[in-house]
Length: 431
RNA sequence: CGGGAUGUAGCGCAGCCUGGUUUAGCGCGCCUGCUUCGGGAGCAGGAGGUCGUGGGUUCGAAUCCCACCAUCCCGACCA
Image (cartoon, rainbow, N blue to C red; front, side, top):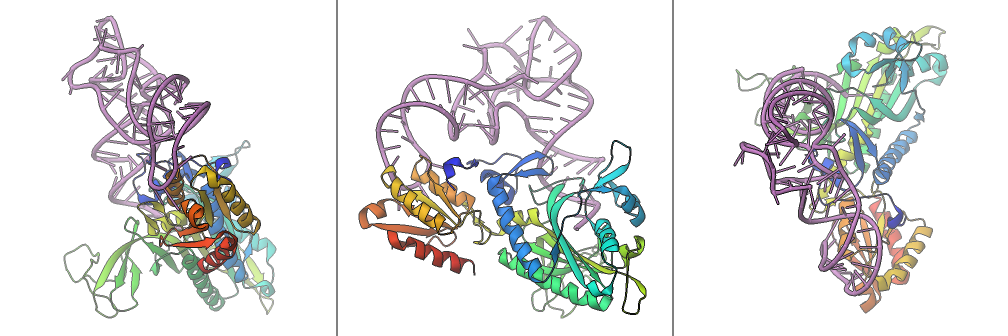
C-alpha cells in the first residue's frame, strides 16, 4: 500500500474529549472517528487492525470446530417477550417499531435468536455438541459511554453459543472454550486474568471473565500474592474482610480466603465472558431435541463473548510508549513500512517495496514527499512493528536498515538480502 | 439519572471577567510555488468561522442573563 494514497490522518494533538491513553492514541493515529457518544466508525487503518484481531478469533474458533454464522442485528420483539427479557432487560435495550407498528429491538446480545435457530435447525442428539459463533455489531443503550472504544453503545462482539445434551457435556465444552480464549488473548499479546464473576442479566449458573490488567479498567479483581486465588471484586462475593466495620470490600493487604496470604487489588478491562446458561433459554423458547432414547429434551446451553472493538483499546493500554502504539506483530495493520529518507533513494525504496509486496508481505510504503522525521514519527505513532529505512546508510555502505518498533534495535542488510531477512523477522515475530 | 466541567476553522487554544479598533486572533494541519531532506524543515502566497442552538437585555453581544442541545470526567449502572 502506498501511504500517499491511503486514507489516514495522524495528528500531534488529540481532541480534548479523549482522556485515556488508548483513546488518545487511536484518535491521533487515525484509527477511529466518533459520530455520537459511544458510536464510532473505524477508518481504514483501524479497520485493518480490527480485521487482524477478527481473523485470530476466527482461526482459533474454527480450530476447535465452531461454526461461524450471522444472526440478525434487528430482532423481532416476539422472542424477547417469550424469554421475558422484553420486560427485564431495561433501558439498555433499544426498542423501536417498524412501519407496521410491530416491535423490534437492536440486538444487545443474541441468546433468543440463536435458541430459536437451534430449535428449528437441530432435532437430534446426533448433531450435539455444537458450537456456533458470529462476529457482529451489538447495540446497548448504555447510560454512559467512556474511554473511547472501551465502553461504547455500538460495538463489535464475537459471541459464541454452545448446545449440549447434558451438563456433563457442557462442562467439557465450557473448559474447551476457556482454552480457546486463552490462546486468543495470548496471541493478542495481553496480560490477563481469568476470574469467576456474577451472571447479570444474561443469567445462568456460573460465569467466568477474562480481565486485561490496566490501571484505567472499570473492573476490580483481587489476586493472592502466593496462591492461585483470583476473583472479581463484586458485592456479596465470598470474602471476609479483616477490617471489621468496613463496607465489606476487601482491600490490598487483606487475607486470601484460600491460603491466608496477602491479597492485592488490581484493575482491569473485561474482554471476554463465559456463561453457563443451562436450560434457561431453551426452556423459555421451548427449544428441544430428541435424545438417544427418543425422548424430547431441552438444550443445555453456554454462551461465550469477546468484546472485539474493546480488545483493540485493551491491547493499546498494554502496548504503547512515548512515541505511540506498539502493536503486537500479529495485530499490526501492516507488518512493515518502507521509508526513503531523501528523494535520491526514492527509486530504490520503490524497488524494495515492490519486491516485498510481491513476495507476499503485508507492507506499507511511505512514498509521501515529506521529511524523514515525519515518516519515522508517523510509523511509530501508528505502531508498525518494522521500519525498512533506505537513506544515508544505503548511500554510504549500500546497506538497508531494518528497525524494530518495540525493542528499537537495528539490523543492516544488503539490498538483495532484505527479502530473506524480512521473512525471517516476520516469521519469528509471529511466534 | 445525581455531581463536576467544556462547547470559538479539521485539531489544540487565546479573546469573555470589565459589551464597542476584532474586519474574531494564534499554533498545528490543509492548498500553490521555490528551497531543504535521518526523528514532526524554511520562505512566500492562499483557502477555511451561522463564536453549540434558540430566546432575552442593550444603540451595540463570542463577551451579560435564561432555556435547551451536545460532548467529556466522577458516581450510579453494566455480558
